[in-house]
Each structure stands twice: as structure tokens, then as C-alpha cells.
Amino acid sequence: MAQDSARLKTTPLHEEHVRLNAKLVPFGGFAMPVQYPTGIRAEHEAVRSAAGLFDVSHMGEFRVAGPQAVDLVSYVTTNDPAALSVGQAQYSAMCLESGGIVDDLIVYRLAADTYRLVVNAANIAKDWSHISLFAGRFDAELRDESEQIALLALQGPESQAVLSGLTDCDLDAIRFYWFAEGEVAGIPTLISRTGYTGEDGFELYVDAGGAAALWRALLDQERRVTPAGLGARDTLRLEMGYALYGSDIDEETTPLEGRLGWLVKPAKGDFVGREAIEAQRSAGLRKRLTGIRLTERGFPRPGYDVVFRGEPAVAVRSGTVGPSVGYGIATAYLPPDASPGDPAAIVIRGREVGAEVTSMPFYTEGSLRR
Image (cartoon, rainbow, N blue to C red; front, side):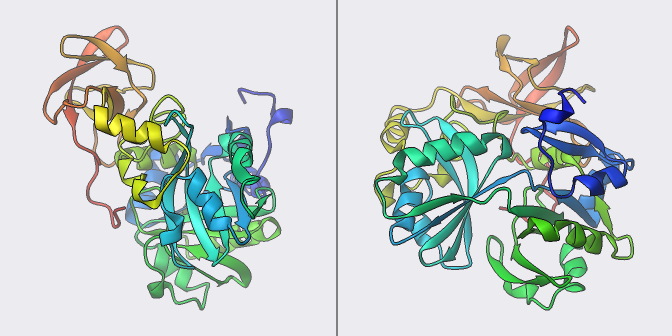
């Protein structure tokens, strides 16, 4: 392992990964499975064709509750949490006053005055500090529940069939980005129809103590479910053009630049970063996250130089060979007038490999779309 394992946190499912001979790597301060003996391609294909199970318990969960919970959440996020019904979730972002993205997250409305914010693992401490800067202005309690909650993601076109055999919850009634509370394999679970793969699926929130039992119950389903690691999670999300914090978006990029302008709701009123984002909208963008596909054989990796309009322009932000599309795909920040079909190249081992600008998602045949 690249880092001293003694310094890494583990999820409640760590022993399950060890039992399954997963390859563990440092990620977001945790020892996480990057792949199982089946391999990344097989895990990726299992999610596209059947069902895969991910441990995403490294994610952080904050509870915001109180008479002004909605006001606090609205002020620190760009989307509009007041528009949510109880039982509904939304994808959102948190920004600095400069408009740079602190994190992307999912906001759940658990009750009229209670929200759950699900944030990226590497950003838990940073996000907590950021929200805490403003929490004192509102009559709301902020609580970090990250260590008490485990999160499993069951993804793929057969996910509902698998889950229906373990719960009495009406899964048909749970629409995309909605959730319900019930039991799965006898374990109290918040069942959310969300995910980051482009396929239908569910994210299952349970108390940490029940995670291992739920994991084993989901895998004991006539072998229809394949355990999947971070490697497949990355290839699946990149094929969909979904942004990864720290790679595609960060504090130096705004939602408008990162193709997340649809998360910004200025009509709701003031929020952190609103003035800067709206000023940028008026002035126009200088760069925008753009999809690139290789037209020659090659494996684009983060950090490789992108040649655009005759000269090295920027670096690849995310890159891989997409198992479902069969060619190299990447993201990079290019001028906003870059259009699908424009020629480009990515420098791989000192050679310019032919590429072109393309629209995202790279893969368009999945069972569900945001």
C-alpha cells in the first residue's frame, strides 16, 4: 500500500474486502478496494449488464436539523433545498465566495426541518469547517454522523430485482433521486434511488454495525451481484461524464466551468459564491470542462498534456479507456467554443496521439440518465 496502513481509516466493510481478496489502496484517507480478483473490466461490465455492489462508506454524512435548517443548507449550497419534498434528494455543490467548488454533494430532505448532506471522503474535514463558518448565523444544529453510517451502492439493470428479494419496500414507488426508509434483509435501511454509474440502482444507508450483514445478504443472491471496487466506479462514472472532485472539479473551478451550471439556482436568493458565479456568467467563460476521445489507440491518463489548436493547452483531468466504448476517453479544460469534432491530441509517452473533442456522456446506452 502506498501509504502507511496504520494512518488509513477503514470502513465497516474492511474485513469483507479482505475476505474477498480485494486489492486495497489509499483513497480519501481510507483503505479502499480498487478491485477484486475478478478485475476492473469484469466489475465494470457486471454493473452495465447485471448488478455490482460498491462499498462507499468512506463518504461523509452531516445532519442539519432545526427551524432554520433549510436556510443554512440553502446558504452553503448552490441548488435549492427548499424545493425538495420530504423523501427527495438533489445533487448540489458548495462553493467559496470566489465561486470555486468546495465539494459536490447530495442533499437529502429527511423531514421538514432535517437534512442529510453526503460529501466526499477526502473533503469531510474541509466541508465541516466550511459549513461551520456559517452555521452560527442560523437556528440549526450541525452534526457529523460519518462514522455512524455505512453506505453501500447496488448498481446495474438488475439492481431492483436483486433488492426486491430482500425487502418489502415498494421499490417501484421510489423514483430517481427519491428515497424511502424500510428494511433490507431485516436491517433498517434508507433506500435511495441514486448512484454514479449511469445505471439504475440504489444507495443503501445503514448503521455501521449492520453493514457487513447487509453486504453479505446482497452478495448471496444466486451470484447475480458482483463486488466492485473504485477502479470500476471510476471507469463507469467517466464514461457518463460525471465529474470527480479533485480531478475534474476543485476550488480553482466554478460550477459554470465544470458543466455544473444546472446546479446553480440564483433565483432562490443569496448563497456562498453567488455574486462571483453570476459575474462570471455575465462576463463569459474562459474555459470549460470538455470531453475528448482518442481516435488512435492509447491510454490517456490524468496529467498528460492535451494539444489543442496546434499547441499544448492544458492537462488531462480524468482519463481511461472506457470498457463499454472501447477507446480512450478524457476530460480537460478547453476554450468554451471547442466543439465536437474539433481535432486535438494527447501526448502519451512523448508522442501526440490523435484525438477529437466530443460531447459527453461518452457512453449513452445505460439504463438510467441524470
